Length: 113
Image (tube, rainbow, N blue to C red; front, side, top):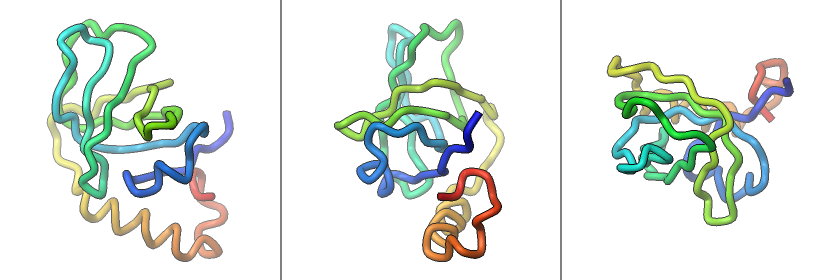
């Protein structure tokens, strides 16, 4: 499998049609179990559509491999739930911005364009 670029909400518009990796906190679930909303590292709330219905509601933090749709929503292709532990999204966002600003220093890191 090809490495996917990690993104925050601000990076979605430049990745329409591509598969990306995103980490964030689930803020709400659709009642039908076919989607949810996630707060990405930069605080942007994004809708996530699922290809299969979830058996149980998600809560806490998740990592997604997802396709970015034209409206900058995401269609999940793979999902890992980290549960209700804590992930410092502010530090993760700073890391993403640094990796994007200085790609020459991170060229061998999977998920960095």
